Image 1 (cartoon, rainbow, N blue to C red):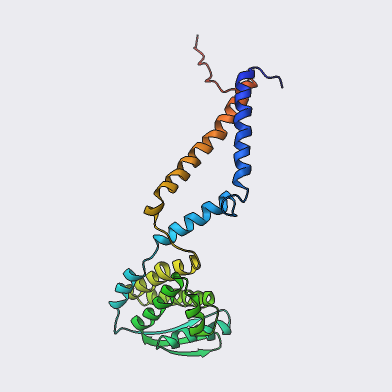
Image 2: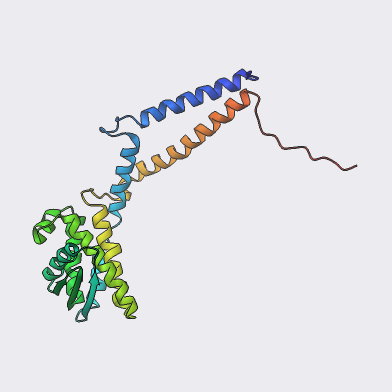
Length: 236
């Protein structure tokens, strides 16, 4: 294919070459030993964690259930999961009986959830050791067992039309356990402390996207390939 406009093609070729050069730089480990994507992902994870601490707010909701009794039977896929989960509830002061893969529970729901929030708070602050020593199991496994059990309890409470209890259990799962598990071993930072970096990344993303778009536009224009509005045919 012949080049129709050398100037436009040269601009496009230069823009495309520099775009690819920057792309190569992004995938190079020049950002404190990480590539650009890893650095950006790590930065956003730290900032996300910094704005995901809802445990004190959830703890206030839990106190509204103080004195209410929880009596449930939940079933797991494996007997060992029921046995491991029983340790969590027993440590929270609940009566926990295992029968195969089934786990029968009875206790004060607020007391149980306070214990759950305590574990979530420790994990959120990267103190997994205290959780693992408490139950004699891997800390992430303990949190996963909490999450699975509370999810099953929430479904049962909804069936029993216990809306307030179900919502509180759901909040503990979604606003305490999930952030604690997902952000474990990540140091949280405030967005306000990194407003400049956030703005810079956003501007770069927009500019870099347009950079490639204009590269293609100039290259195609230099080759004589362009899009023009079709002429409207007038009826005779």
